[in-house]
Length: 80
Image (cartoon, rainbow, N blue to C red; front, side, top):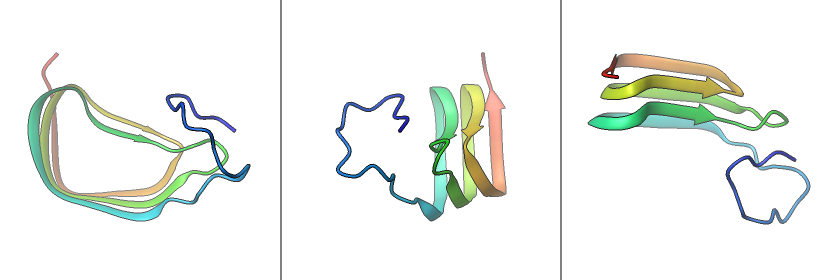
């Protein structure tokens, strides 16, 4: 399995499924990356909704290994 940033030892050889994730009403600035959505190659993140998000960052968004990402009223600004 592929855990790029984790030191956690998995309890199973099959990764958990993460789906139907909703993130609402987020506002901020000054981050390196505004939004990072990063699933696993063998188990993609599914059905993600971002709603009422206004972020300013050096890099607006990074999205890997994800399916069906929906954005409603999302403003992403780069400042770098």
